[in-house]
Each structure stands twice: as structure tokens, then as C-alpha cells.
Image 1 (spheres, rainbow, N blue to C red):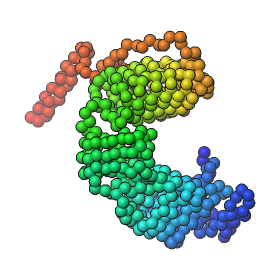
Image 2 (image 1 turned 180 degrees about the vertical axis):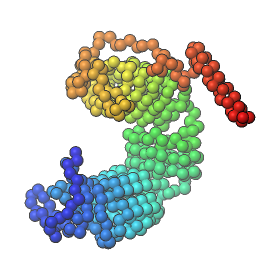
Image 3 (image 1 turned 180 degrees about the horizontal axis):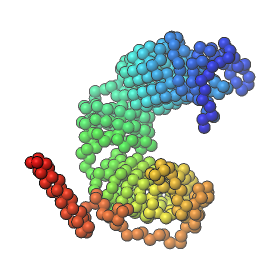
Image 4 (image 1 turned 120 degrees about the vertical axis):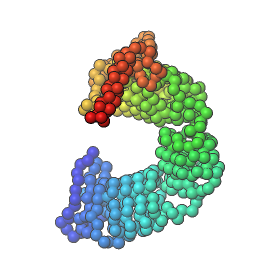
Length: 467
């Protein structure tokens, strides 16, 4: 929680904190502190900006107001003039464009406590030749070192930084075998490598980030040995492999990453274990989905805003429903939950307006914020509690969730709710424009009226032309 924002104007030429059992001696000069703007938070201090002069070296203190400096904020040192900026070992994150465009910056030592370097953090630092990156860094966002000599001088085919982050690929091989030291395939790491035909991804890879293989149009084969916990939906879409995949169900290994069919009733193939993030997002046609027992995980936004989806039948091995998995499925009126379900992610069932309640199985150990019983209001741009939505459960975690959120609590019914008939109509009662052709006659008057309006417009133009 934000506690204070300060532009520090020191009263003394030098500030010294004596060393005790709980503190560290810190000496700062007014030249640095008088130009720092920062925010004091509960767990530390974020540097938000610095008013520059022409010092070649600037040293940031490790504590301010008795708290550690833990973050360099967005654009905090944008276009700075220093050759070197010394960061304290307490810094954990370096924000978006924090040092972008620092034309004189030559060296940078990333603190040993740092775990994240933000988007374009050092972009266009055209004299930055030396960067020391510890293995504690687990995330390096896209373009973090764009336009720097540091990146240009990397000679290895696989540019691996920090904790096994494959930041960029510089090789020319047609058949690429990614080293098993790689943990993350970074955003756009292989982008625009038109000569790559095959890629083998080892089991060590846990994350494949956005656009990782963007525009690799010759890519025809992807071998995935493990199961990454993060596989961004667009990581492989703009490839020959994706565009010519021989099935409506696009899979890598046992993970379903996309559905390109037009069926309203979808039966996920046996053997699929993970429904990946956004696999069905925004599909306007599907009304019914059946998951086989092989599926264990439904990831974030997997069925986000599938507005015609009415029935979901899970197999009994699903243990996790990710954040926003069924967000905005307004027509969803029936869902058979897995008896092995353990986690329901935040906002998983927001704006499932046709549901009057949900059965929460006994094995559930975690329910995320606003996971059930809420809807999104476009009018007020906020989440609204539906106080009529019933939580049906004998589970202690679910009971606590219902009580904390003010939702009705009911026992699990003796018999499962009867599945309602599935229709092809939208919430307005009219035939969905995405599903087949209209079967009624309500469209005929509209068609006639439309034709008359078009004819009138044509006649009007002719009259004006000859008047």
C-alpha cells in the first residue's frame, strides 16, 4: 500500500545513520537526495525520477527514510547523462524504460537481489557495452537491451541471460535444438528467423513468452518435451506450423493451444492434459464443451467471453481452473465440476449470468478473488456482487468464501442439476449470427425495409444529379 511520495530536500549537507543491530550505516549527499523523487511503501522505496545534472557517476542510497530502496520505477532515469549509475544491492526490480535513452551510460551492474528487468529498461543506450546480470534475474522483458552495444556484441547463437533466459537467438541453423540450460524462451527470441524448419524445446523450459517464434514462416515442426507452466497464445501462431496444422484442435504435446473449428458442440480429444491460456477465447459459436478425464488443468481465460457457451462437462481429473477461465460466458447455465478440483482462480466465473449458483467440490483448497458470484458492470466499470448467487458446498474453504462475500450458502443437492436444453440463440433471444443460417421468418420484414431504404437512396442521388 502506498504510504508517501516525497521530493526530498535535505536540511543537512550530509545524513548519517549509525550502525545498529537492525540498521546499516548510510551516507548520502544532498546533490543526490535533493534531486530524487520517490515513493515510500510498506516493504520498501521506489525511485520514480531523478533530476539530472552532469555527474559522470551517480550512487543511489540503499535506504531512504529507514526503508530499503527496492525498485527503480518506470522511466525513472530516462535520458540520463551519467556514465555509471550505481544501484544498491537492495533493488529487486528495474521498471519499464527505467534507463532508456541514456546516451552516456557505459556500464551497469544489476544488483544481486534483482529478479526482474522491465520492458525496454535499457533500450537505446548506445554506449552501454558492459552489463553484469546475476542469475537471480528471472524475468527480462522484451526489448530490455534493444539498440545497445552490449546486445550487439553477444556472439553465441543462444543469448542466455540471468536465470536461464533465452533472450535472443543469433544462429542460422534450420534445425534448432534449444539447450537444456534454458528455462524461459523470451518474447520474440526467435522472431523473423525465416530459415528455421524445426525446433526442439527441452523439458527444462517452463515459460514460452509472447511472440517467441513470431514470423518464423518456414517453421514446420515443434517438439515439446515437457509442459511449460506458461505458453503464451501467440507464441507460435504466425508460423507455417500453426497455419497448416492438420486438425481443428491445435496441440503441442498434450497441450491444446487453440481451436479453429466451427462446430457448436466440442468434444476435446482424449489425451489432452492442459487447455492452454485463451485456447477458445472469444469463440462466438460453441454451445457445449466436454472435457475428457485426461484433462487436468484449464488455464487463464481459456473460455473467456465464449458468449454462446451453455454447457460445460468436465472430466473428473481437472484440478485447476485458472483466472478468468469462464469470464463473460453469459449463457453458461450448466457446469459439471471435477470432483478432484483443488483451485478456482480469481474471476473465473465472473458474468456467468445464466448460472444461479455453483457446486464447489470437497477437494477445493483455494478460491481466488471474485472467483464466483460476481458480474462485471460496463455502466459502472466495476465488479458487482450477485447476492442471489448460491454457493452449494460442504467444503470449508467455499463456505468461508461465501460468508466473506455475502453469498447464499446451500448444501450440495442430493441429485445433480438437470442439464438444460441447449439452444443456438443468444441472450437477446435472436439467432446468433455466427451459427448457421436463420430458420425463422423474422428477418423478412427487415430485409424488405432495408431494400426499400437502399432503393430510396439510389433514386435520391439520381434526382440530385439531374436537378
